[in-house]
Length: 295
Image (spheres, rainbow, N blue to C red):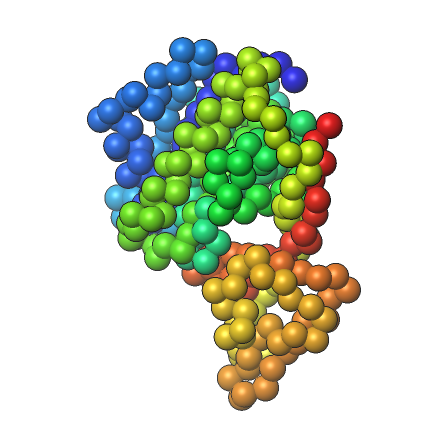
Protein backbone atom coordinates (compact mmCIF):
# COMPACT_ATOMS: atom_id res chain seq x y z
CA UNK A 1 0.00 0.00 0.00
CA UNK A 2 1.23 3.51 -0.79
CA UNK A 3 2.06 5.74 2.14
CA UNK A 4 -0.73 7.88 3.49
CA UNK A 5 -0.01 11.58 3.19
CA UNK A 6 -3.36 13.40 3.20
CA UNK A 7 -5.86 12.79 6.00
CA UNK A 8 -9.29 14.33 6.50
CA UNK A 9 -10.91 14.29 9.94
CA UNK A 10 -14.65 14.81 9.52
CA UNK A 11 -17.12 15.82 12.20
CA UNK A 12 -20.78 16.73 12.14
CA UNK A 13 -21.82 14.35 9.38
CA UNK A 14 -24.93 14.16 11.53
CA UNK A 15 -25.83 17.57 12.91
CA UNK A 16 -26.92 16.38 16.36
CA UNK A 17 -23.88 14.21 17.11
CA UNK A 18 -21.93 16.75 19.08
CA UNK A 19 -18.62 15.19 20.09
CA UNK A 20 -17.02 15.40 16.66
CA UNK A 21 -18.37 18.90 16.11
CA UNK A 22 -16.97 20.27 19.34
CA UNK A 23 -13.66 18.50 18.86
CA UNK A 24 -13.33 20.25 15.50
CA UNK A 25 -14.00 23.56 17.24
CA UNK A 26 -11.39 22.71 19.87
CA UNK A 27 -8.78 21.73 17.29
CA UNK A 28 -9.37 24.87 15.27
CA UNK A 29 -8.49 26.94 18.36
CA UNK A 30 -5.40 24.84 19.09
CA UNK A 31 -4.11 23.20 15.95
CA UNK A 32 -1.26 21.30 17.61
CA UNK A 33 -3.31 18.20 16.87
CA UNK A 34 -2.98 18.95 13.15
CA UNK A 35 0.76 19.48 13.19
CA UNK A 36 2.24 16.17 12.12
CA UNK A 37 5.45 16.62 10.20
CA UNK A 38 4.87 13.69 7.86
CA UNK A 39 1.15 14.24 7.27
CA UNK A 40 -1.20 16.84 5.85
CA UNK A 41 -4.34 16.85 7.99
CA UNK A 42 -7.48 18.82 7.25
CA UNK A 43 -10.77 18.96 9.09
CA UNK A 44 -14.23 19.14 7.60
CA UNK A 45 -17.54 20.09 9.21
CA UNK A 46 -19.77 17.94 7.04
CA UNK A 47 -23.32 19.07 7.82
CA UNK A 48 -23.31 22.61 9.27
CA UNK A 49 -26.99 23.24 8.48
CA UNK A 50 -27.95 20.08 10.33
CA UNK A 51 -26.07 21.42 13.35
CA UNK A 52 -27.65 24.85 13.04
CA UNK A 53 -31.11 23.28 13.10
CA UNK A 54 -30.10 20.70 15.71
CA UNK A 55 -31.12 17.80 13.47
CA UNK A 56 -29.42 14.63 12.31
CA UNK A 57 -30.19 15.74 8.76
CA UNK A 58 -32.52 18.10 6.90
CA UNK A 59 -33.69 15.92 3.99
CA UNK A 60 -31.89 12.57 4.15
CA UNK A 61 -29.02 10.89 5.95
CA UNK A 62 -25.78 12.44 4.66
CA UNK A 63 -23.83 9.31 5.60
CA UNK A 64 -25.80 7.25 3.09
CA UNK A 65 -25.21 9.45 0.02
CA UNK A 66 -21.75 8.37 -1.14
CA UNK A 67 -22.40 5.54 -3.56
CA UNK A 68 -20.55 6.19 -6.79
CA UNK A 69 -23.75 6.27 -8.87
CA UNK A 70 -25.46 8.68 -6.47
CA UNK A 71 -22.55 11.09 -6.46
CA UNK A 72 -22.80 11.55 -10.23
CA UNK A 73 -26.60 11.53 -10.37
CA UNK A 74 -27.61 15.12 -11.18
CA UNK A 75 -31.23 14.41 -10.23
CA UNK A 76 -30.29 13.99 -6.57
CA UNK A 77 -30.41 17.60 -5.44
CA UNK A 78 -31.77 17.88 -1.91
CA UNK A 79 -29.54 19.44 0.77
CA UNK A 80 -27.66 16.33 1.88
CA UNK A 81 -27.39 14.93 -1.64
CA UNK A 82 -25.92 18.22 -2.81
CA UNK A 83 -23.69 18.43 0.23
CA UNK A 84 -22.36 14.93 -0.53
CA UNK A 85 -21.33 16.07 -4.01
CA UNK A 86 -19.55 19.11 -2.55
CA UNK A 87 -17.70 16.93 -0.02
CA UNK A 88 -16.81 14.43 -2.74
CA UNK A 89 -15.32 17.25 -4.82
CA UNK A 90 -13.34 18.50 -1.82
CA UNK A 91 -12.00 15.17 -0.55
CA UNK A 92 -12.39 12.94 -3.59
CA UNK A 93 -13.49 12.28 -6.16
CA UNK A 94 -14.41 8.79 -5.07
CA UNK A 95 -12.36 6.30 -7.05
CA UNK A 96 -9.48 8.74 -7.52
CA UNK A 97 -9.47 10.69 -4.29
CA UNK A 98 -6.92 13.35 -3.44
CA UNK A 99 -7.45 12.40 0.22
CA UNK A 100 -5.71 9.18 1.21
CA UNK A 101 -7.52 8.49 4.48
CA UNK A 102 -10.74 9.71 6.11
CA UNK A 103 -11.64 9.51 9.80
CA UNK A 104 -15.36 10.19 10.23
CA UNK A 105 -16.42 10.98 13.81
CA UNK A 106 -19.82 9.83 15.08
CA UNK A 107 -21.82 9.41 18.27
CA UNK A 108 -24.36 6.71 19.01
CA UNK A 109 -27.08 6.58 21.64
CA UNK A 110 -26.23 2.88 22.07
CA UNK A 111 -23.97 1.59 24.83
CA UNK A 112 -21.10 0.76 22.49
CA UNK A 113 -18.26 2.54 24.26
CA UNK A 114 -15.37 3.50 21.98
CA UNK A 115 -15.90 1.58 18.74
CA UNK A 116 -13.80 1.66 15.58
CA UNK A 117 -15.56 0.59 12.38
CA UNK A 118 -13.19 -0.58 9.64
CA UNK A 119 -14.46 -0.66 6.06
CA UNK A 120 -11.69 -2.90 4.72
CA UNK A 121 -9.91 -5.99 6.03
CA UNK A 122 -6.47 -5.50 4.53
CA UNK A 123 -3.11 -5.41 6.31
CA UNK A 124 -3.42 -1.69 7.09
CA UNK A 125 -6.83 -2.01 8.74
CA UNK A 126 -6.06 -5.23 10.60
CA UNK A 127 -2.94 -3.68 12.08
CA UNK A 128 -4.84 -0.50 12.88
CA UNK A 129 -7.33 -2.50 14.92
CA UNK A 130 -4.52 -4.21 16.81
CA UNK A 131 -2.74 -0.91 17.47
CA UNK A 132 -5.89 0.82 18.72
CA UNK A 133 -6.59 -2.10 21.07
CA UNK A 134 -3.03 -1.91 22.39
CA UNK A 135 -3.62 1.72 23.38
CA UNK A 136 -7.34 1.45 24.22
CA UNK A 137 -8.10 -2.03 25.55
CA UNK A 138 -11.70 -1.00 26.15
CA UNK A 139 -12.25 -0.37 22.42
CA UNK A 140 -14.39 -2.53 20.16
CA UNK A 141 -13.26 -3.24 16.60
CA UNK A 142 -15.97 -3.88 13.99
CA UNK A 143 -15.31 -4.80 10.37
CA UNK A 144 -17.93 -3.69 7.84
CA UNK A 145 -16.14 -4.97 4.76
CA UNK A 146 -19.16 -6.83 3.38
CA UNK A 147 -18.96 -4.77 0.18
CA UNK A 148 -16.00 -3.24 -1.68
CA UNK A 149 -15.10 0.34 -0.80
CA UNK A 150 -16.57 1.61 -4.06
CA UNK A 151 -19.98 0.19 -3.13
CA UNK A 152 -20.09 1.59 0.40
CA UNK A 153 -22.40 4.57 0.85
CA UNK A 154 -20.52 6.06 3.83
CA UNK A 155 -18.67 9.38 3.66
CA UNK A 156 -15.46 7.63 4.76
CA UNK A 157 -15.58 5.52 1.58
CA UNK A 158 -14.65 8.49 -0.61
CA UNK A 159 -10.99 7.73 0.05
CA UNK A 160 -9.20 4.47 -0.63
CA UNK A 161 -8.90 4.09 3.14
CA UNK A 162 -11.49 5.29 5.63
CA UNK A 163 -12.80 4.49 9.07
CA UNK A 164 -15.74 5.45 11.24
CA UNK A 165 -15.26 6.28 14.91
CA UNK A 166 -18.49 5.55 16.84
CA UNK A 167 -18.59 6.52 20.50
CA UNK A 168 -21.49 6.09 22.89
CA UNK A 169 -23.72 6.15 24.75
CA UNK A 170 -24.49 9.79 24.15
CA UNK A 171 -27.96 11.28 23.66
CA UNK A 172 -28.52 13.32 20.55
CA UNK A 173 -27.66 17.02 20.93
CA UNK A 174 -25.72 16.39 24.15
CA UNK A 175 -22.01 16.47 25.03
CA UNK A 176 -20.56 13.95 27.50
CA UNK A 177 -16.97 14.32 28.68
CA UNK A 178 -16.23 10.60 28.82
CA UNK A 179 -17.51 10.14 25.28
CA UNK A 180 -15.69 13.18 23.94
CA UNK A 181 -12.45 12.09 25.65
CA UNK A 182 -12.74 8.61 24.12
CA UNK A 183 -13.27 10.14 20.67
CA UNK A 184 -10.28 12.43 20.97
CA UNK A 185 -8.06 9.63 22.25
CA UNK A 186 -9.12 7.26 19.47
CA UNK A 187 -8.59 9.91 16.79
CA UNK A 188 -5.10 10.70 18.07
CA UNK A 189 -4.33 6.98 18.29
CA UNK A 190 -5.41 6.34 14.71
CA UNK A 191 -3.23 9.18 13.43
CA UNK A 192 -0.29 7.95 15.51
CA UNK A 193 -0.79 4.56 13.88
CA UNK A 194 -0.73 6.05 10.39
CA UNK A 195 2.57 7.81 11.09
CA UNK A 196 4.14 4.63 12.43
CA UNK A 197 2.74 2.48 9.61
CA UNK A 198 4.12 4.88 7.01
CA UNK A 199 7.56 4.63 8.60
CA UNK A 200 7.37 0.85 8.97
CA UNK A 201 8.01 1.49 12.66
CA UNK A 202 5.02 -0.08 14.39
CA UNK A 203 5.61 -1.63 17.80
CA UNK A 204 5.25 -5.38 18.09
CA UNK A 205 1.55 -6.19 17.76
CA UNK A 206 -0.31 -9.34 18.77
CA UNK A 207 -0.56 -11.93 16.03
CA UNK A 208 -4.29 -12.32 16.66
CA UNK A 209 -7.07 -10.37 18.34
CA UNK A 210 -10.83 -10.59 18.68
CA UNK A 211 -13.03 -8.29 16.62
CA UNK A 212 -16.56 -8.31 15.22
CA UNK A 213 -17.79 -8.78 11.67
CA UNK A 214 -21.10 -7.16 10.74
CA UNK A 215 -23.66 -9.65 9.42
CA UNK A 216 -27.13 -8.09 9.38
CA UNK A 217 -29.56 -5.63 10.94
CA UNK A 218 -32.80 -6.50 12.73
CA UNK A 219 -35.96 -4.43 12.61
CA UNK A 220 -38.43 -3.80 15.40
CA UNK A 221 -41.55 -6.01 15.17
CA UNK A 222 -44.49 -4.62 13.18
CA UNK A 223 -48.08 -5.72 12.65
CA UNK A 224 -49.72 -6.22 9.26
CA UNK A 225 -50.47 -2.48 9.12
CA UNK A 226 -46.87 -1.52 9.65
CA UNK A 227 -47.48 -0.39 13.22
CA UNK A 228 -44.75 -1.03 15.78
CA UNK A 229 -45.88 -3.67 18.27
CA UNK A 230 -42.81 -4.25 20.40
CA UNK A 231 -39.46 -3.06 21.71
CA UNK A 232 -35.95 -4.32 22.39
CA UNK A 233 -35.99 -6.83 25.23
CA UNK A 234 -34.69 -5.54 28.55
CA UNK A 235 -32.07 -8.31 28.66
CA UNK A 236 -30.60 -7.01 25.41
CA UNK A 237 -30.92 -3.27 26.05
CA UNK A 238 -27.53 -1.63 26.80
CA UNK A 239 -25.71 -4.95 26.37
CA UNK A 240 -23.88 -4.07 23.17
CA UNK A 241 -21.33 -6.70 22.14
CA UNK A 242 -22.73 -9.24 24.63
CA UNK A 243 -23.58 -12.56 22.90
CA UNK A 244 -27.10 -13.65 21.96
CA UNK A 245 -27.77 -17.33 21.38
CA UNK A 246 -30.59 -19.26 19.74
CA UNK A 247 -33.71 -19.01 21.90
CA UNK A 248 -32.67 -15.91 23.83
CA UNK A 249 -35.43 -13.27 23.96
CA UNK A 250 -34.62 -10.21 21.87
CA UNK A 251 -37.96 -8.37 21.65
CA UNK A 252 -40.82 -7.83 24.08
CA UNK A 253 -44.21 -7.16 22.49
CA UNK A 254 -46.59 -4.69 24.04
CA UNK A 255 -48.98 -7.54 24.85
CA UNK A 256 -46.30 -9.03 27.10
CA UNK A 257 -45.17 -11.85 24.82
CA UNK A 258 -41.60 -12.23 23.61
CA UNK A 259 -39.78 -12.91 20.35
CA UNK A 260 -36.64 -15.01 20.60
CA UNK A 261 -33.51 -15.06 18.50
CA UNK A 262 -33.67 -17.78 15.83
CA UNK A 263 -30.39 -17.18 14.02
CA UNK A 264 -27.98 -20.01 13.30
CA UNK A 265 -24.93 -18.25 14.76
CA UNK A 266 -23.95 -16.66 18.06
CA UNK A 267 -24.68 -12.98 17.50
CA UNK A 268 -23.12 -9.91 19.05
CA UNK A 269 -25.60 -7.04 18.91
CA UNK A 270 -24.52 -3.42 18.65
CA UNK A 271 -26.23 -0.16 17.79
CA UNK A 272 -28.91 -1.55 20.13
CA UNK A 273 -31.99 0.67 20.10
CA UNK A 274 -30.09 3.47 18.36
CA UNK A 275 -32.43 6.47 18.45
CA UNK A 276 -31.38 7.70 15.02
CA UNK A 277 -32.39 4.42 13.40
CA UNK A 278 -36.06 4.58 14.36
CA UNK A 279 -36.86 6.29 11.08
CA UNK A 280 -35.89 2.99 9.43
CA UNK A 281 -37.37 0.90 12.27
CA UNK A 282 -33.99 -0.70 12.92
CA UNK A 283 -33.55 -2.34 16.31
CA UNK A 284 -29.89 -3.42 16.25
CA UNK A 285 -27.01 -4.67 14.16
CA UNK A 286 -25.69 -8.20 14.57
CA UNK A 287 -22.10 -9.35 14.19
CA UNK A 288 -20.11 -12.53 14.54
CA UNK A 289 -17.03 -12.51 16.70
CA UNK A 290 -13.95 -13.17 14.59
CA UNK A 291 -10.29 -13.72 15.28
CA UNK A 292 -8.20 -11.37 13.21
CA UNK A 293 -4.80 -12.69 12.17
CA UNK A 294 -1.93 -10.40 11.35
CA UNK A 295 0.68 -11.59 8.88
